[in-house]
Amino acid sequence: MFKGTATAIITPFKDDGSIDEASLRRLVDFQEENGVTTIVPVGSTGESATLSHEEHIRVIEIVVDQAKKAKILAGAGSNCTAEAIKLSKASADLGVDGILSISPYYIKPTQEGIYQHYKAISEAIDVPLIPYNVPGRTGSNMTAETTLRLAKLPNIIGIKEASGNMSQVQKILADKPKNFEVLCGDDGLAFPMIALGASGVISVAGNCCPRSMSQMVNLCLKEKFIDASALHYKMMPLFTHLFIESNPIPIKYVMKRLGYGNGKPRLPLTPLSAENRMILDRDISDLGLI
Image (cartoon, rainbow, N blue to C red; front, side, top):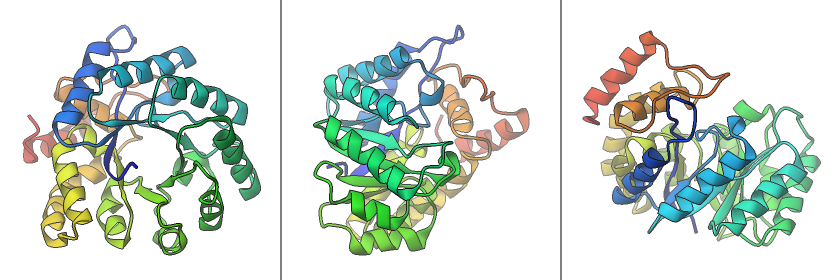
């Protein structure tokens, strides 16, 4: 359902700290015009952790209203199951195509707790649900065994895998149900994961390079790996440098250079350092983004 290229879009802000609706709408257009098949608002890259619930829902509402072709996979996770259900229901009511839900962070639940968390969300909503495993942010890993157990639930249709553990990824790919989608959560691993059988990527770099990301993913899905590798290696420095400071600090700077928002994340995240701006400026120039 979400096969191909999805972009975890930034939430652009104005200088007064409010949501820059005009930039957000232009960003949706930019994604659709350049081949992105799914837009993911208010994920980690969209600074969901620093948005109020009202802002969170408003961003999704704007994206749903603006999108004409792309599917909408809305971020609606929380470390509190009841809160995740509340956000998921509100997002579903806006007409999204699916919910992306981060594994509970900070509290480090057991694997049974992770399973019961997602089971409760899946039973509370009637839209597809994709869990998101990102141990670097949550402090705990969702094992392949837990993912495969969740894959048996009716409306859990896939996983966003960002553990970076390729042995774990291959276990999921080898044993998953046929229609269960494995989506890469790391731009730098999209090429190898799709080559191994993943369905696509949920990308940070897609914010600024939607056409190149879409082309690379489509070539991989068509098993044209030599052509895809050229794009992969061309973008590889950017893939690395977009995490030179905590995401979304670097991509917000890049998107400011492209004309989307003021480049400033909300505290406790701070703007990109001058030293690292020079590194990203080289990537912007090398890739011809401006």
